[in-house]
Length: 457
Image (tube, rainbow, N blue to C red; front, side, top):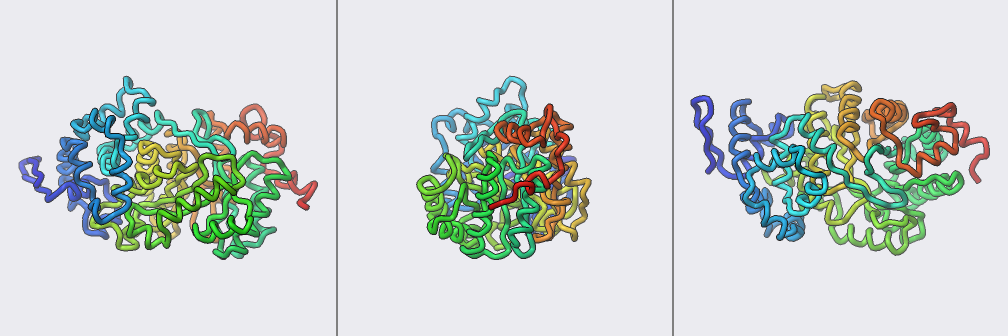
């Protein structure tokens, strides 16, 4: 039992899981799950209790028991015990102050990240303001290499997402050309398929590979089918730089997504032996607050803590890309623009603190109390926080997934505003194509016809 006295009231919490849940910023998903604080003062009381909790208490009390859950076991067994021994006595409040201190080097943060359980990562995020989350994340760099290197200081990359309602190859190609003409696609040219079949995934991969080779584009390609579909496509000879899968913060959640850890290991091994990328980072994971509640796989824990557990799982496999699809699930989990912005900053910070090359799909659905200004605000804040990449789609409207995110030209505006550039190899290619000049979009920017003058074979 944890207790504190605040404003003449005594607040009691049953266990670590309840403290974590009640200390979370207001989220509609936690209210739906019945774990949220009843009011603001109870939330502050939980934060006070959490700030005095030691990191060892959090490690010793995972929100899903070790014996019942593979994600917990992978996280606990992967912790560097030598580094953990140095920090186990810190309180969460002390950990927060250490992360925000000018005297703490980025290298020291990266070292300590190897000793953190997901619950520690979630706990410190709950004690931070939005500005704290931006500042702390901006100091952490997590590069990764597939065909090119993502995550270096001064660079902000993009996933070009040319989704189409029927997977029509020519329609997809037109969207790819438009995105490239705005300087997008350096992190990935990646499509969410309508038809999750080996034949359909292979057809799009072959077109992406054709575009990449013909125009000598230094980037990565992926079709985001189910992991088992992608594995089979790769086995049958499809050109494949990386393999994608949505992940959850519990084994039960991953089972609901229809995959196992053995699938992930198989995908990684196949890519390293038969894939088309140089590697060594060849996996792509997506997450999103609330997904565990959707599959009744949250074990009574809050959605921020379950999200942190996704990152603990992902880092086991050294991915090239991880991103939170922050507002995609809907208002059941993130009700409005304020909650979406908060969640995006939390997720980016927690992913980086976990040692991941973290990006974000700054998005919302039309039945949420959010609008495009909220998403652009989040994208700008993430740019300041040093996000590895964000996602761009035509006119900000994904006509296949039926949600809103950043448009292609949003990325160029953020780069210009913050003095950021694409991945270095991609920037050189853009300059060669006349799309990029003197650190910004050039005279041929926004003109997709420059890719159609020669045509594809």
